[in-house]
Image 1 (cartoon, rainbow, N blue to C red):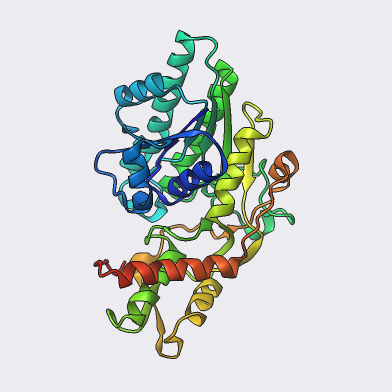
Image 2: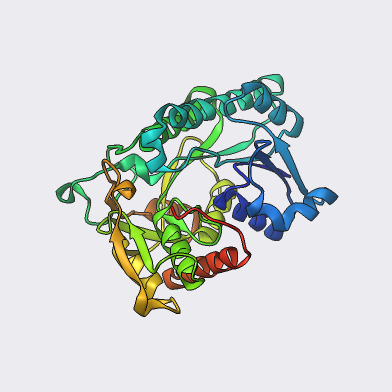
Length: 343
């Protein structure tokens, strides 16, 4: 069996690669751009050099020919489409790139698969299209279901990134319905852990705290909106969910909300991380205007019963363990001597 992961060098892609190599006998093909940083997969480079069930393939969502080549040469049984311009705040300053990469990039990938299926009717891969909980956007408190945001809640995207993920979501379902492709779509809610990009709130908190502990910056954690409500899952639980998504009776055209069980305000997350610091008594918090979104999706609480009923998945890693592992990850990164922007 062969699995193809787009965005393998990202946080989720690298953890999914780890999971598949450890828990399956599949060959794993990771798609990355030639300029993609390899930090998140540095522990796997020796294995890739030996071609020990791990292979890196160079392609770009914005280059259709490269995607056609990868699909026709690898012919994966499972495709995990994780690659995206994934930073909501960045999408406000780079909307065209976000829409092109996420919507048209997904279309190019699905077209490449459709073309290969047209050449060989026996080729029937299972495709996971990763949308986002951001598609639900800014839901007024009076309209939020008591059980949380379920799959049939209306979309109300609150950023160009969220708009792009609405397109990604709908494209996945369209290709399943129009061409009989086994495409399954997910809307994963906030998920984090080691290797999380430093543009996301909980990760920039952890990075700033690690830099403060090392004496590299003043003892001030700069923040955006601390009142946004989030439900957290660990990235390692998330990739296990993605594996179950494609292996437990995958249903073409289905779509699922997936998320953790621990809900709190962003400010509570910050307080948890500060409470773990060795210099917590000296840390101050400062709101920085540049970290605020023009519009914020501020009630991100999921109802995951549909996915849990279908697969039996349950999150296993606690919120506190996730935060501790994230902070220790940044302590290790900062302690390595690398230089980081204070973003």
